[in-house]
Image (cartoon, rainbow, N blue to C red; front, side, top):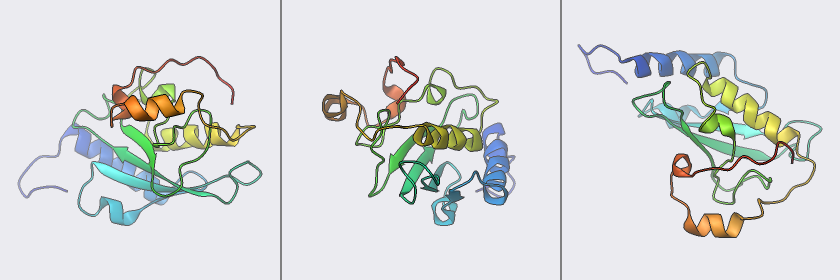
Length: 158
């Protein structure tokens, strides 16, 4: 959303470009929730469907993306939201996702589409639906913003 007579920022230009890319060429099983971007370009909801042939086939999820004014130099805040949070070893029951590209491995070369593809891949490669071992403690004690968590990335498997 632009005010008349104002020059768009780097962040706003990048978000507009990514918004169009997500609308015109979304990753498989992903669609932008158009209502979510009507009032603000800095908060999006992406509707997601579990990939065919996986443990999540046919399940529907929602991802919430929040962008700071420093995007793309600062990673977006990304978490599952809504009624159905996937049961996965790297997804907490409050929707927080333990995925390195959302924090320390973020690069401005990444995009909303690449984050979506990484999350689809993470879910699709899962062999057993279960919560992270520290789910109860984490959910009770964590910050509402998952980017404020100091994640320990200790496995590449599900």
